[in-house]
Length: 111
Image (cartoon, rainbow, N blue to C red; front, side, top):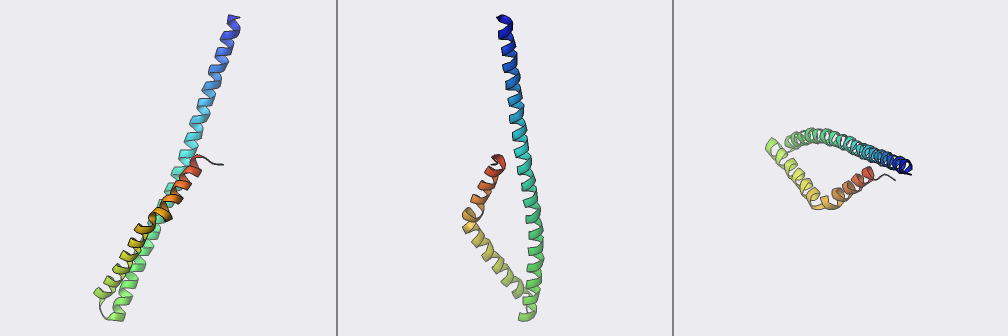
């Protein structure tokens, strides 16, 4: 009887250890997927920012040529960029926060 209880105790301990390993692996996989997606998004944001910077500079010089004032071209482009920033800040809760929450949840709890 005692040998059977020891055997059962050993099997239960082994079962719990294996379940703990499965949970650890699942967490590691979810974190890895999330970090991979985060790095991809950050690289895209960085590249898009560089492109936007160069397009803004080009637009500023183009407008400066049209207006015969480089400063005016840069001021107009800066005003446009400031307007875009203001729109983004005002709509970030709906356009950014909720999709990010959904994305994080889907990475940690895939269907």
